[in-house]
Image 1 (cartoon, rainbow, N blue to C red):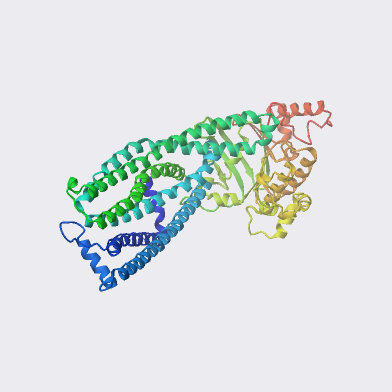
Image 2 (cartoon, helix red, strand yellow):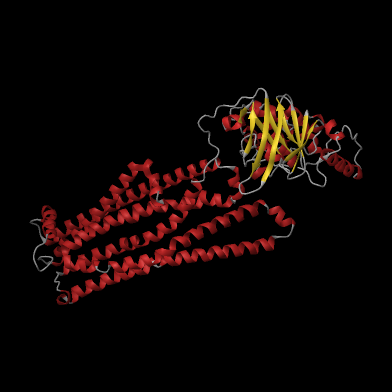
Length: 626
């Protein structure tokens, strides 16, 4: 569908308001035309003139004027007639402005309602897009589409309804009056219209392309601001303030150039419409000063009214002349919005998918996965995790461990093989039901700019406050939460910046405990924590793991030693599989990773551990391990 028609389809919920706005616009135009009609008898009454508007004889407008004014001024003196006509003129002006205000206010309700609906639809759509989209698209571009681009879509509505609708009514009413005053002069006036049309056509060819470039550049600036604000500590730590300021200045200059190019073409509309108005004015002056030149003879009041009507048309005509330019800019934003809306969502339950249940085992069978446009990161991986067992996943950084566990909640779909839950492939189960069985605690804890209470409540909105406090206690988080300025009702700041890494992790564990899932995924949950924080988090994790099926990506977890099963992933392939004791004595990758970190800890003065039964599995020395 054409983008302009497609955006106008969003007006369907506001059909009643559209009808009201259009009707009021039409009525405002009629009252506006009525004031023009009243000017003729009013001028006659004031200046004592009489006669037909055109020398050829009385026109239909004369008949109409007589029909309208006779009940008001028939049989009265010129002074009384002038007073009554002035009163009627003012009443028409008041009614015109009441109608115009109602039309404009209703139009605002329509525009803002449409923008709200489109923005909500776009945000909802984004929530269901494949995760790979967010890995290849800058967040600022998405934000720009949600805010600026959606906002500009209402220009299509306002321009269509105000510029095209209302202004067209004004022009038609004015033309009706002009043709009744003098058809010949009206036709001569309209002869200048091709100048307007040709001039506008020349400007529009490049306007939309420049407008699209401007919208893309604006999204880039939004991305840069969001990214740099989030990385402000990094920028300061490495003394990059000057370079970043210069880079932003360069980007802003590029945006400036695109804005100027767009405005250059938009501003060209005004001179062209002014030229049209000047041509009309010249014709009118010639008609009044030298009637024989154009073969038109008009009475003075007719010339005055014709001039007023023609000049009154100039503003609507100028507005209509700018309509294509505004639409061109707005449609560039509309294109971006619909490009995002047309991205195929992956998070949609399809016919045939049913609710998930978990009673027996999780099974990966011949799983191969690749991100779009890249080489596979997992190759033919197979293993089984029986219910109630703990599986540890270890291996070098970049081996594909996180990708492996991301397949379980169906964040991604494998290109080959399948993941099974109780012998049912995940593709046959709804995503919502699968995720209701899962609790996920990752290295990078995500907290919202909300209260501590609200952040724990995520995923379990029906929980009571007592449930939240109980989960926080079990996660070793209650004490530090109570120490916050407003306790559980303290705002945590964007991404939980008011909390330490260990505190954020304990909140995430409390969130998982509150959810009480049968399956738990731990993705390096104690990575990069200091010793005390790691101890508190580890205690909370041990409580969290009780009586659950656990997939744990190991960093420094004592649970690795006690895991029921361990798999070693290298370059996306499962290279070793067994218990801790079995793998350690195989003298393979697992043993080398352990010995490497054990040696590093010994060199740093750490207590020696039994190589056969380590308290902590050392997996994060060089080469780095995640």
